[in-house]
Length: 364
Image 1 (tube, rainbow, N blue to C red):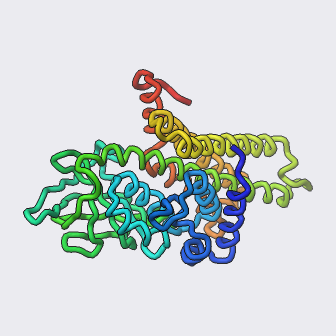
Image 2: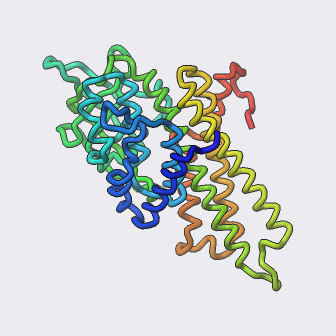
């Protein structure tokens, strides 16, 4: 599963843009010059027609820089939901703008009980004019306050379904959230009889969201690997430069052991993330197999990133807990991404279920 030459060129291009354009300023060049927003969009809808491995390359580089651009919410979640719906009209109307980066999409999905599709409680009722009305509260909507396209999961009489809701329509309130990780914009979306248009078949939302969850975990795992690897790089550089008792601290055996353990965690997480991305591209039809690998990657990469970010702070000593150093930013991203799309223990439970193991079986 070595990266192809084309994937390495993509990595270099993304890294170069992020170096020249810090923060939100990177979105325009990333979408306009490289076309990252359309990587996973089929060519018929204005995209490049690539897959999870190319998305993973972009996510890994975004993770290295803790980039705040809306790639995960728009180019991964919203695009996957539209494609999974099988609604050709909605895809033809919405995907070209998302692929070009002219529009940003958001998928309003999670509620108080988390990311399990079966937990969706927002209600959708049919209106006489053929539209729908949705009421409910959606939490942790990535990029929800700034999005131009809003896809909402709600429970219709046929079951969980997907709907398009006008972001500025009556009955729609978008509230930016103050989160621990300020680099990942989230919003609460409150819907009070908001007018909506059905996307795809009624009752198909459970199936679509289950696949979106696996793709989201696969993409997020790649981001976590990139961020964890950057934490290790920064810490290695510091261990070579910081001198105590007349020696670089990296020369002490105890520090070497901790750095070696961190390296093993990063590379193990990288293997898990690549395995899930490969399964997404090559074996997604084998849904159970892909779910197992996506759940394993989310759990392993979340815990690896959290551990390495913690070691970064510990091995930097006093400077590691100051506001001026980047260590706290990586630590906050590690904590936030660990909970995003479900905590590691929830994904281990999913994995146990896919393997047919009894509830409560310890996995790692």
